[in-house]
Length: 388
Image (cartoon, rainbow, N blue to C red; front, top):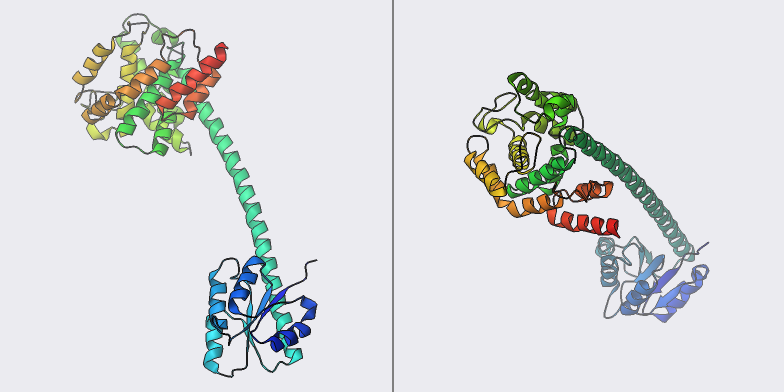
């Protein structure tokens, strides 16, 4: 058990001797001036200070002010020692931080009683402080555990979202890369439009679900090598509504955004799109962003019904469709993001059959949804590790 310690400060040797004798049980230390008292208190803070008011150079009030201003000593209770009966001086002592007064000549019982009282009060305060610190530490630790659990749940949910999106894409794209390319394209475009990092992250994971409604479409239609007839095309045009129904009613902000993406990514700026024929800014911005990215990827990769178009031809189609199919502002953002889009296209190109869509590459995609440059480096490191 630690015994309390006190520091007695007085410029009169007789007073130091008397008080040291009265308080010998507390192993008192002594200082004959204010500067020495400050140094001793800072080096090894006592539990209580008895401080003379009338001292040369630094008087007791100034010493107390400095003790209060120092984080190392501000919680040490100070009892002033004085022979003065001046009420103003007593008031000033409390104003600068003192907790009590002991007057000269000393009454041994009063000295011991007041010292004991304030030491007990300090012990209670210290115990409360330590208990609070332990509680705060436990709360922080528990909060960290809960946050880690929430992060794991979120990662699991995002992983499920990604795999559902991939499942839909495998219906007509046996590489599964389209959904990842298109989601990264959307992030690159939205960044040009000033979206925050948090919103870019939400967009990436929501865009993975844009074609979830394809799960309800027959393979015979999705993989048909020739043009669709009117009946088949009517079936295809239902997939945004089906996707929105699959995703509806969720409490997750990502799934809620994915519902909007699924429902609106085939709407057109001029109102000729489907399923609701929305026009202009009535189409949610996220749908307008995903629309151009989805079309660009469809143009530049091979499909059962068409060859891959060269980049310049695809670019020409996008520019010509500005103001009709696409929001002109989104078209401008798309071309402003060209460098990032080409990075993503290289990383997830369908022309790399020797680089399958492994769990490691999927994890890289989740880790860097809004940074295609970091993504390219990460995926290259995955490739290197796989080949070694």
